Image 1 (cartoon, rainbow, N blue to C red):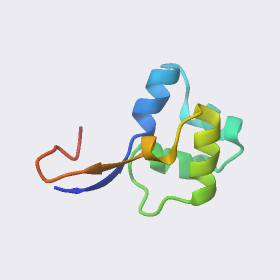
Image 2: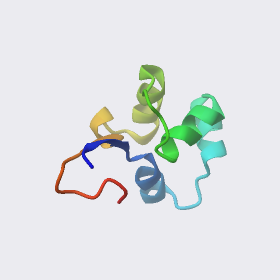
Image 3: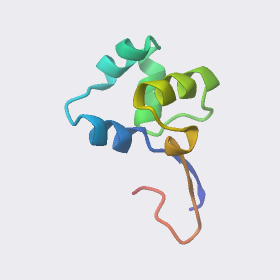
Length: 77
């Protein structure tokens, strides 16, 4: 199924396999539940301020966090 998904879990694992959602939320000074929803790809809308804080923390662009999945790709990878 095509759509958009969060890539936060993969980015966190690549940076530090031991980095928890709670620690990330604390480090970026953001609501734990919002970070958790993005990590678990449950977020319907992506808040700009969350994306900005994540970009700054991981030193990447927004396109690293939000990935377009096309019809020929598996949405749940």
